[in-house]
Length: 238
Image (cartoon, rainbow, N blue to C red; front, side, top):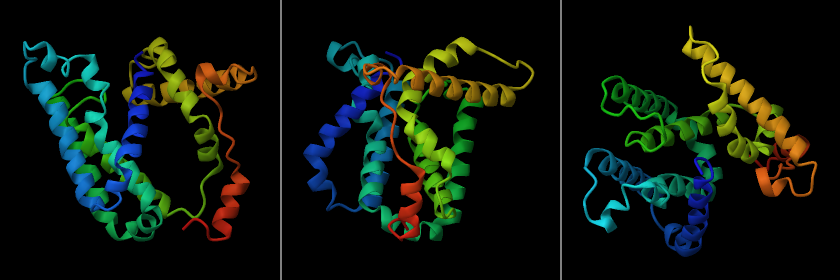
């Protein structure tokens, strides 16, 4: 339940797309993204800094059900929607905003770290008021980096094919590993990441050898590097 709840949120994204895509496509994407980030920030801030009300209906938003709603994740849906609609235009112009994106990423990261160190928000999770702007900048940073590379590396395609399986399985291994290196937080993060991803991929491959495997831990993608390479070679991807 600690992992699969986000599948419920993704299903809500499908519903939002079905209901509002025709309306959103005619809106200003920059304003809509800014509004959604602000909305998500305020939503998580209210849950964090305002005591849970006594009203059973309002209190529902402060409980587990509150973060299973799309409201706190709206910025991800809006950003994903517009980057999909305007992908070619985004990639053609994103280099013009290299320094604003780098600066925005630096400031949002510093803000997040400051909130943690100062005790304003010490939760190590995604349901924080400073996460929407941070995640938005990180996503834009990855788009920026991809604009400077001509081809998608093979290992990125490989990881992408197993991404859903990794998402469903990683939680079990991260919790079991604990601290691998108590003397270095950075080494602990690196080792935990490598082991978790590697074991998740191996287990996903083995379970998917059975017909029912994909229904338990997700299916494996079939994107071929050669096809992606050909799309770049023939100019289908800017």
